[in-house]
Length: 70
View 1: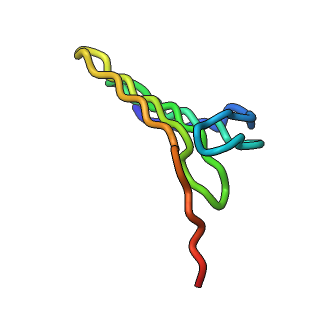
View 2: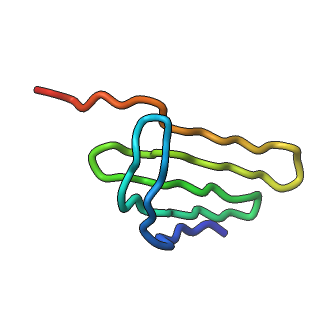
View 3: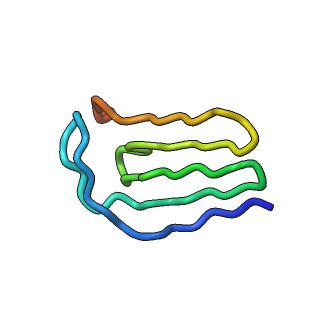
């Protein structure tokens, strides 16, 4: 089973800067879950991954961002 759910919008404090109204998205599978905060125009801000049946937990956090300039 696999599904994703947009739970809410939240303000986040990161080393990069304060991120307003990031979407909290949860991906659930049989083996675990991924929790992501996503901001339009930036992408994934932090992410947490857990996997059941093993000792794996991954945390990622945005430290810097340079917008694309055409």
